[in-house]
Length: 636
Ligand code: FAD
Image (tube, rainbow, N blue to C red; front, side):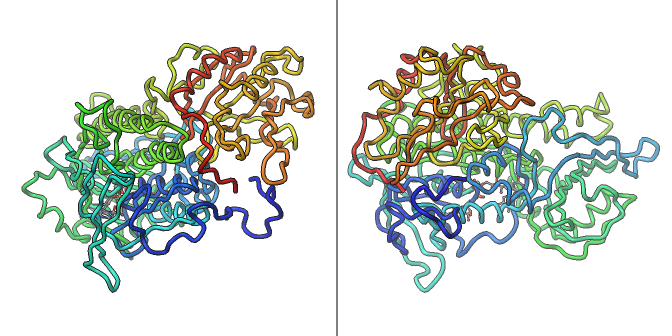
């Protein structure tokens, strides 16, 4: 963590100095805002947290509940999400309080007596070492708390506006604030009163029954029937031996349980399958009592028993596989002629079973994808065309998720005797692990993602997929660190320069590239506003092939050691060398002639180029950046 560069900080360094709209931020919801987010679920809170890092952007997030979510809803945190939490600075703290999944056990009917279940397999959770981050279980409410803390500590000092329900919106073609939103207060002395707020952009993160979705004429399409689960978070005494392991349990009587141990060492969640529910039959399943859910769980677990001592939360969770065909308010025939003003994220656009534990995770990545784009457009860094990439990128991800989840939930629902291969379920779980871990997202070529022309320079940094970190050694202090873990959710592009093998000679490709990116009018850095820190928009780092003792820090070009803050101090934390025990060049198959890896603010690899391809680099950024602006600059 870097601080003190503006002078000595004696308090919590996580609290950033207030800036821009964070200075004297109005307590009351204003009449006009840049971005209005509706809903404080995972999608909305991540989007708000990301936008809280843009001091010139006035963002408000409204929620119909009177206060924070206390309990319930999703709890599975995939490794990609923990990686994202790292960018928001709370991966370590949430990991410390969470349950960590390391193995999954599979239970099926005993072939000798189908009324009894037996354990038939245990699989390691991440056998292929997909990520250095853990797979966690922690309640959605705690995830939201961490995002709330992050945004409160941000320069914009954001906090949710509770007690406002979204009712409707209209979009005009004119004016600075073209979206007019009608809200109603749901709590406090003014409950029932209407409020009208005008916004430049609206983000509907208001869940599966989204009114924002409805207001832009989108509908969820998909299965007619819903699948229902009785979900309970309970404290219980049991002789079931794997109660502290994640388990998929199928009984001979046809029922199944997904068991998820929870944080704290005692609590666990059971999803008890209540089967398919036809649309006309919804009322009946919703009235399933917790006692009925417990009875069913006991029947499935036979010969083991479950003595429930305390029910912390329960719900009947019903959901079908549904998806909207667009994630913004631009109709197919308007694409390319109109910029989107209203977006939908998370469950508002896609719903699916809980069995692969994806709901909260994919929703957060929707928010991550969208929010930095809004920040860049509103700050004048990028043209509005950037916003069209949100729907294009995330709709495909949601479609893939629904296809995956259909396959997984169909397998889970199959009776044991229906499997041709008895280990089909476990095999599928292990074979497809990268998908539910969140790492199979691969954005197609667009204005933000290059084609694979130079992919061969770095085969393991797949263009369009998230940047897979690896260990390196920071030259200045000889610390072994993870390169990707320094990519914060600060809205900056990252340019990783992997140096050639003789980088200090005056004519080396690394030196020539450093000279070009520092001085050329075609360099993306030339777009950085005057007066801002040189790395305010682009975080340029170098990784040398040598051992750290072989790098002369004084010979490292200035662009990798920018002078920042009011005292113009040298930032030494962008210069890395290889870790001889785990050489990043070997681990990721990097070309020894050197290369450039461009990574988006949401951590996806946008382009890979040779060090000499400065014209291509300039051409890549040309449509992404607006000509240099002189306003809306807030140095901390
Ligand atoms: P949500 O988390 O649904 O958040 C939407 C927010 O918008 C809510 O805070 C809501 O109060 C607010 N809101 C809604 N309408 C308005 C409005 N008109 N005006 C203002 N605010 C509004 N997923 C799992 O993986 N496992 C589970 O066990 C599981 N259980 C669930 C149980 C319940 C009861 C629910 C509702 C969902 C459950 N989910 C579960 C789904 C999971 O929680 C979601 O996939 C995830 O929360 C989606 O995040 P989101 O931000 O898109 O929406």
